[in-house]
Image (cartoon, rainbow, N blue to C red; front, side, top):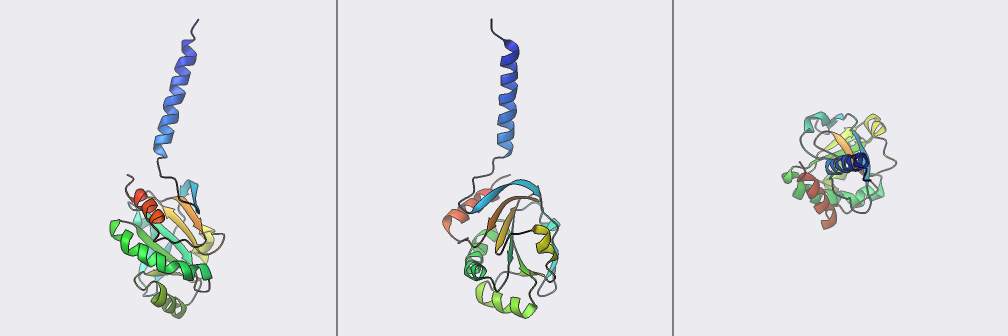
Length: 177
């Protein structure tokens, strides 16, 4: 005899599974980018070298590329020109790029950015407190925050961000609703 209760339970389980999978329809990240269980992004309220304030809460509604770096970091030096190029291509499409320097002085930051990323504004985490809240395991460290303020991806170490595989991945995020 056919068991209708089992069939009903299997059907319900299948529907729920499909709904959960549909909600997590973010793309698979390229090599070196970890997909995380989403969690609320820690607060960021910092100033740039010119004293202009930035608050991460004001970026709701757009994807945010949160990047921690320091001038003494070799991979940061290598990676920053790629971020500069990526910025030129993806910021007009809606990606907000947030560079956070970890505990260095204004002159060091100014000189570094003048060479490696002259068009991007960097925030100054003067005492390292914001960096500590985000808990990167080293520098450089990048986090991708969705339109709702949830962290979905993390990249540790340098990346060629202007490479097509990374550009296409981030573009796919920007097109998600």
